Length: 289
Image 1 (tube, rainbow, N blue to C red):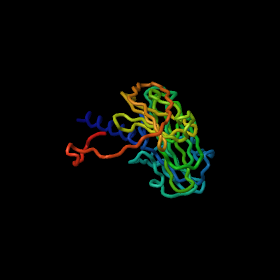
Image 2 (image 1 turned 90 degrees about the horizontal axis):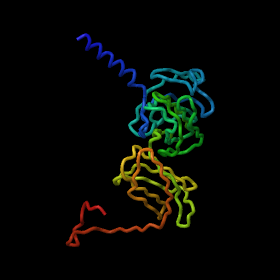
Image 3 (image 1 turned 180 degrees about the vertical axis):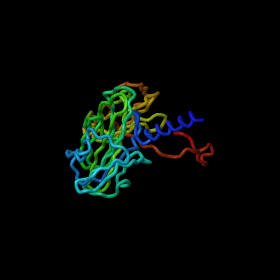
Image 4 (image 1 turned 120 degrees about the horizontal axis):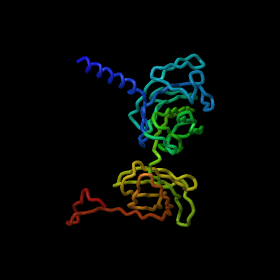
């Protein structure tokens, strides 16, 4: 009985130690469990507001750790687990214009991987540290768009630190982040018009069995990149812009595979109507067209 009690005590202690560690896997899922600190006055991505407590490239905060701002305000690292795919600081901290917040978590990697793809959406300016490296910086004010930007970083086997620093100019204040391993499948290419000229900001999507897997907007030169993880089976690719489109159907994608395909969009035809029963009056419900 005593052994059972000790085992239960050890398990509970282990759970307590790991339960609030905000550890995420490299699996393409959005990271929604973070330690949050803020608001800190200022919107300078180059100034290390955490210099006195370890610095942005080194700090390993724990739930309940405190920090004092230059104006004497005491802030606490607080756990926040979002029920959506983004972290909304207006919900967590409220409205604080010209302020900065931090979010900290760990990323667990099963092996060394020097080609992990991070997909980030943010509102407004952001900097991201992976391990000790400042892996991404984007100071522009912009609305949040999921997977809007991509950056590549290294992960070592085991636990890696991840720190997100994001400031708010005004209005919304949020970010989303997820990590995809190097064994992902990728499809890259360019979206062109019928004359072979690039189409800026066209949408490119990949679907499987009618379900959306991933969608991105091509850049100003029509270049796009789609990431799929895990890659299993056949996929349909679509590119479209206004009333033009192109399709690449039943493409088999495998683990770690890289494919290149340029879409050349053509005018699309829009057909609509009703499917009727043999009596030519009753609607045929549930029929796939």
